Every structure is written in structure tokens, then in C-alpha cells.
Length: 365
Image 1: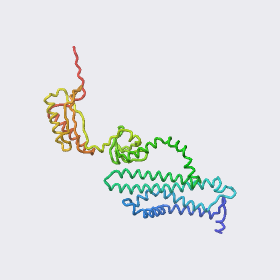
Image 2: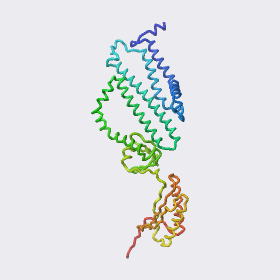
Image 3: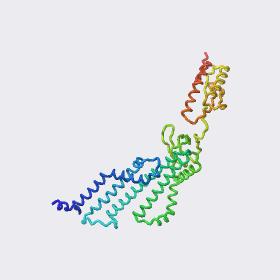
Image 4: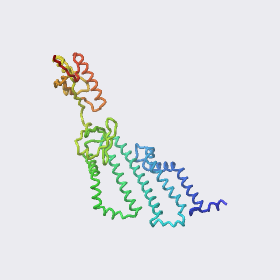
């Protein structure tokens, strides 16, 4: 009785076939996470000897989504083998253009896409391994090289995947296609002029090394720490913690200030005193400021300049110039704060006052 029920047909397939289809899909979904972890484990076992410093959990995070997609596609392939289109629909075979061919080609594209995604994620894992090894060295050049190599491998994988898809899925002659890219390639190159210039800029940055990852640079009024150097652009983290993307072409064509190569930080500013300050007071203030700033433990000796610089509209301006022996910004602003307090104390001790913009109005009867 059950056997006869299972043999009833609906849309050209028996109930038994539908049960097989649903059962395989259900098993694939139930064991999806387990199969994904097992495949990741076997891949990690294979790469374990070359992945010092990077663990299984990191590989699992990278491969989880692409492996899930790949496993579902394989599950769907085995499940769909138990179903067929109804004969009365008179659907053309997969060799002729029709719904079968569209579904078959779409499935092939999905499989190639999933495999490419897996290879791209494995490239990311390789990047993590290389970055860990680069962090063990003192040189920053390898820190800069690793992202460049990783992005290069990714570009090659995507290009190879596209050509493979055109050849294996759409049955195109790849050799003829490449040979026919003469004029078309020139048109593409002209259209991608900016991208090619940025690519050449990335090679210039890599070879000339005007900066490396971790350097603090300033360009066109933008200041930030270099976090990533890519094919097209360089990413900077600004002091405001925003993320700025600068095209590589601009970095090699424009004046660039590498602030990390400074040997010290400079402080240069003016303080204004009121016009009722006497000359004797000014001389004492200038002399005491010179001595106090030079005696600060973080100020470079023989580099301090304190002078009465100019007579402004509402103040007599004293210029203060000194160099701090640190590149750390937090230390620098702390030293400036300490010296600013010293300036205030010396001005107060000499019974002088800081000036601010004022206007004197003389009225005649």
C-alpha cells in the first residue's frame, strides 16, 4: 500500500522522488555546520605546518560562509538528480538553448564562484600568516609587502576564475579571445587610465618607500597614520580616528611630508604682553623664559629662541621657539602644557599682563 502510494506521479515525478529530493536537502542543511567544520579542520591540518601563529578558529571564520555555500550547492546537485521536468512540457535538452541550459550554466557559474570565494579566503589566511611573520621582524618593509602580495594573488585568482568560467562554462576559445583583445584592450586601457596610474603609483611607493605602514604622513592638508597600501589607494587613520582613502597617484605626484622621519617636534608660537609693560620687565621675562625652557628635561639644548619679536596693534609679541626630543604626540602635548604653565608663572611673577585685542577711544570736547 505504501509502495503504491509512493509510486504516484505528480508533474512527471513520483512521490518517492520528491521524498528523496527533500530528504537529501534536509540532511545537507542539518549537517551543514558539521561538514563545514570538518572541511575546515582537514584544510587546517594540511596547512598547519605553514601557519605558525594563526589558529584554526581564524581559518574557520574565513571559510564558514563560502564553504556553507559550496556544501549547499553540492547537496542541491545530488538532490536534483532524483527529479526531472515533466515530459509533456517538452523542454529542450541541456545541449540546446532553453531552461535546462540556463539552469545548468547558472549552477556551473555558482560552483566556480563558490570555489573562487574559498580560494580568496585561503589567500586572506595566507595574508594573516605572513603578517604574523612580518610582525616578528624589526623592518616595516615586509609589513608593507604582505598586503601588496595578498592583493596581487587575489587579482590573479579572479582573472583566472573569469577565464576559466568563459572556457569551461560558456565553451569559448580563450586563446582566440585573448588574441582579439588588441583594439578592445587599448579601449579598456584608455577607459581605465586612472586605475593604471594608481597601480603604477603603488609600485612607485613600494620601490621608492617614501613611507611604510605605521608612518605618520601629511599630504594636501590631510594628516594620518598609514594603515594599508593597496593597488589603487592608501588608507590613513587621522587623529580624529576617521578613515581617509588617498589615491596612490596623488601620493607620488604631490609633496608629501613624512612626519615619522622627524628627529624631534617643534613648538613655535607668540605671546602678547600689554603696552604698559616696562622694558626692564620685558627683558627679565625674555631672559627667564629662555632659561626655564632650556632647562626643561625634554627640550633640546641650544635650540631654544625667546625674543621680543614685534609691536602689534594691541600687544608686544614675544616669539617662543623650542624643540621637544620626542616623536610621541602625547608626550609632546604634555611638555607644551608644562612650558605654558611656566610662561604664565614668569609673566605673573614680573607683574606683567597678557594682552588681548583692545581699542582706545579718545574723545575731544
